[in-house]
Image (cartoon, rainbow, N blue to C red; front, side, top):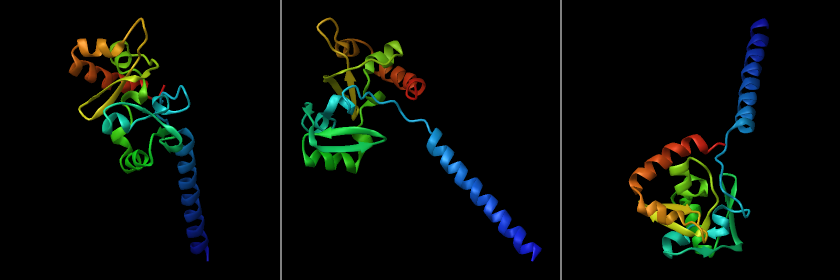
Length: 160
């Protein structure tokens, strides 16, 4: 009888430990910081449209989804379905923050969703205003070097 009670106690202890570990992982897991300035990634533009239409289209309220804890809008049901099939393909680099600012300045900067580049199968978004266009700066520089710098800098910035 003592042996059975001890086994039950051990099993309960292991089960409680497993439950606590699972809860703490969910509560304390770091999430990537996405640029959701207007409530959606890419300011509500359809991230699939950059790839399939070669230009950005504004998303519609009736075509939305949540991925990695953030909201995305799409211009059509077809683009929503494409995103759901392979979201990693369409999510903008660096959480949708300005790629040039991440790479060159190691800082997060908001974007103009119509200032973009699809390079090497990845979507890069940029800040643009009448004073400054970071897409032009990106293209003037050594883009491969900027991509590498951006990837390295993003590893430090993505959870802040």
